[in-house]
Length: 284
Image 1 (spheres, one colour):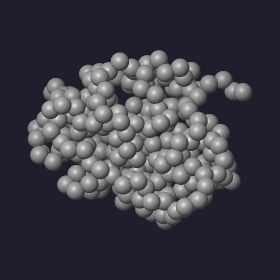
Image 2: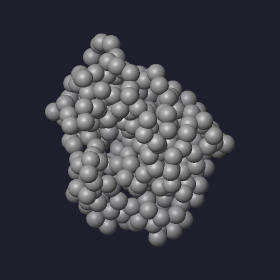
Image 3: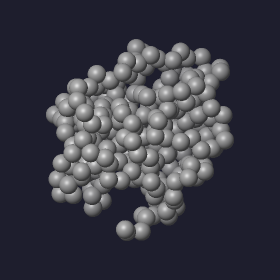
Image 4: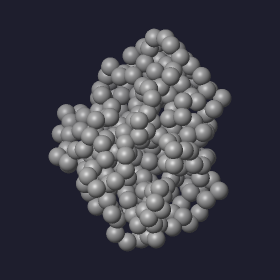
């Protein structure tokens, strides 16, 4: 038995029995929806999955004809979704609490983010691996407002923003809260000066959620598609931007893996040359 939940706990579920596959997906839709460089999906037979709480909290967005992505409407965590055939359910690994087999492959590597390095030895596939039997979905480039700066947007396009200065920091965070929030192996957080940030459109389409038991842990997401988006903080004078939401290369690569001691057992970091810290890096 393996249990899973969203960040706020409104949505909870169980997976019982062996899984069919555990895969890393680098497609642009997964990046947008999770706000991370890739999503890690656990594929299970439909009879082995049970939603135990929070069906009314799940929001479904049709990301392409006949295909949906689901999320918690309160906190934005990605939630499980049945395959079009109904025979299987795909579950975000970042939200499962128990043991899992190690991931088996990377897919849609042709679409991976330019700022992310795949540093392990798992097989890589440009699109669907052989035998998966699903066609690739063509997706138009985001139609953001014109202008300078590094731009970002959500999956449905309702929300768009830009930053007109280089990022202050770029971190991969492996803590349990970030796994639940991003429904992924880790969060990929860029921090920009608040003065350099601007909304292009859709600020009124955003839901914010602050974790009640945390001093300052919160997320922002598009209420239509659930994608993680920029989260400004007037108190700290910075804006946190999930790197997976970016439409442009930020011109900087991640400078640290943090909270590595809290990472999921299936999260294999590989030799990517990025420093690792058990918790936070030393102050400088």
